Amino acid sequence: MSPITARCNCTTLVSVVKLLILMHVVLCVFCVFQVLQERFTKFASETNSIGQQRMEQVNKMVNEMIDCGHSDAATIAEWKDGLNESWADLLELMETRRQMLAASHQLHKFFTDCKEVKPKQNSNCPHSGGLCRFHFRGRQSGRDMRLLFLKHS
Picture 1 (cartoon, rainbow, N blue to C red):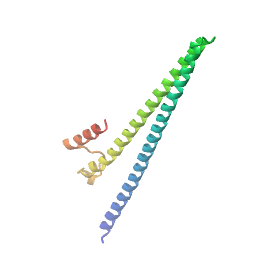
Picture 2 (cartoon, helix red, strand yellow):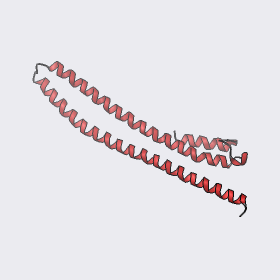
Picture 3 (cartoon, rainbow, N blue to C red):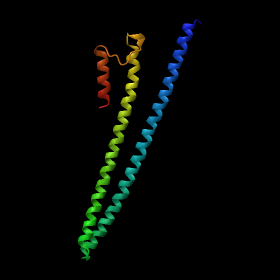
Picture 4 (cartoon, one colour):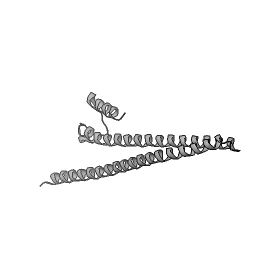
């Protein structure tokens, strides 16, 4: 085996090992996203169902106190309104967090797909033996990037 062939084999081996490590890291990050989303979905569902039951109980009890002519009915009504507003805020915050997790997942997926496209672009590059950085030529490369962008929008 000539030194040039041995060097090419070593370079190929190093490239394959780097790719395997990158794939493992990407898979780990993806798994973390999945677990985080699943746990948050479970948390939000439980919080919503249990909280809704408790809010109904509290509102029923407060309405009964007000209807019975409690001496602090005005204060109780204010507290009830404040509690209902806080509950609505919590539900809104949970929905916002759910949307943020979904957006983070999509962004991670987009960057992962970009990492997959980059080697393909580099291998098709006629300059520097295929070692150029995102050298987009012709309509095909632009179309590939538009498709990638549309896939994630």
